[in-house]
Image (tube, rainbow, N blue to C red; front, top):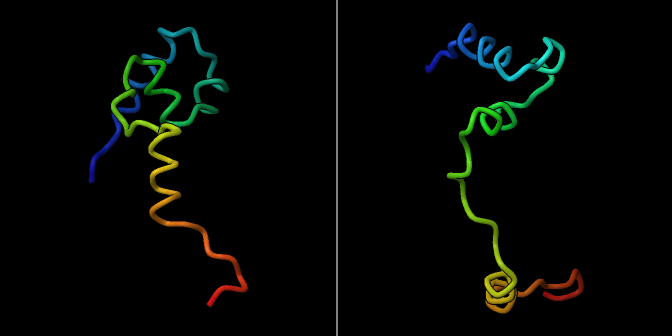
Length: 65
């Protein structure tokens, strides 16, 4: 299990000028983004890829068997 370095995170929040209520209201993703991280996640689907997937796996209505 990985432990968070809360004191370091709170110092970073203070350095960002966050008030305690603002710091604790952040999601981990928001805090990571504010600290310059993030952006390494999966790329959202573009229209072309979504259309390819829709064609390959069409939705089937409730009445279809």
